[in-house]
Image (tube, rainbow, N blue to C red; front, side, top):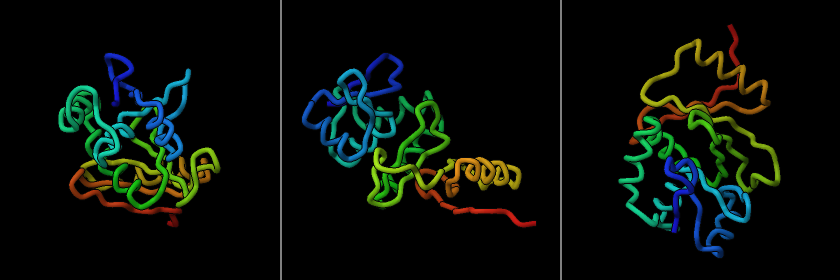
Length: 165
């Protein structure tokens, strides 16, 4: 059962030790003080695919509660789900759902560095200024840039590598 680690529900922990070990081997969360800590995106994904359950509430109530804290959460969960279903390991940033790190297929987070930076831009197409900023960020990190935009029902992905004027 997934339980919130605090009242603000920024992280979740799996109470079943054997299940937590399986989740860690599959690349989810991080171990801290002997417990597996999962981000809300990871917890939502595990419940959505039926591998875990919340100790209180349903997936719908969880998404509603997370949306109150972060209005982009449903879109971020949808993008996370799609990328994870392609066989890629995805790691959300701890403090923001605006970016994800994606790893090459078959590569785990502890084995190699990420290969892609995914920038989430829900609801609209990126402006030229946003594109230039994100390409610079990705190039500084030496990562490929993927921009996810649209809505949670139908996200669109754009891969950018450089701008030539």
